[in-house]
Length: 342
Image (cartoon, rainbow, N blue to C red; front, side):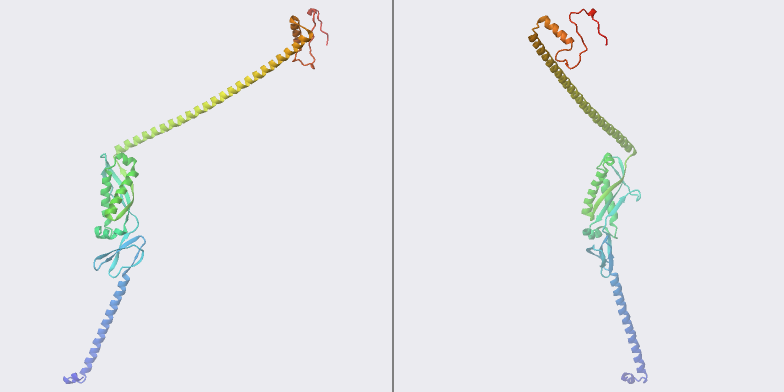
């Protein structure tokens, strides 16, 4: 007020300057409050955008888009990740990925076999990125995330077409699985050493050889199949004939054994009959000896006795209890014999 009065101003002029100063101070306070609110809002928004989520099938690198730098530490644990301000995640797949060379993508491989025949090859292989090599993979092959896939495809094409020249067309026709395993091994060795990934499997889906060669191979395969069929038929017949021969040998043994058994039966029956006859003869001899000794018959008389005794049913074989229907007249003319009526 003193300054205002001393300068010759009117009494109400200092009051007007004081009000303007207060208004200016209020505007400055409002501006500072707005700045503080803006900074706080930016801090909240920045903090919010500094948190990212990572899926279980992903791994990532932290990228600071303000400083254009990448953190070499690989983030592999899924969940919410605090990346820090001005940062985001460069995401890479953790699961197995597939690269295909086929007609759909118009990138069938054109090569030649070891014997010089043209070969159109379609295949696919599965690879997995190595987490320990993710930082080197990004710095070596990626301008943008995913650029490494084109490198993988070109390297795979080169290695596979080069390996195709080490196998003949006949091997491609008959040993496809073996060739696929050799290719997988070579790719895995190179990818592990230079491309920070492993090759898990490889499948050959198409191998087009010249038509003339394919027809020849099919004809040869058909002929080979027929030969194998005839060999199997021959082996079956051999087994059948061997079985028939064994059956015949067994039947022959049975016949021989039956003949031997019949021989023994006949021999035993013969021996039994001989023993019976021998016993009969011995009995007859003993009986007639007693007659000879008792009656004193000798020579012709003894013979006549034996004769008549036989005709009368005598001897040791005769049954004394049976009635003999026979009569003998000694010294009578047979013509004078008259049988009695019955």
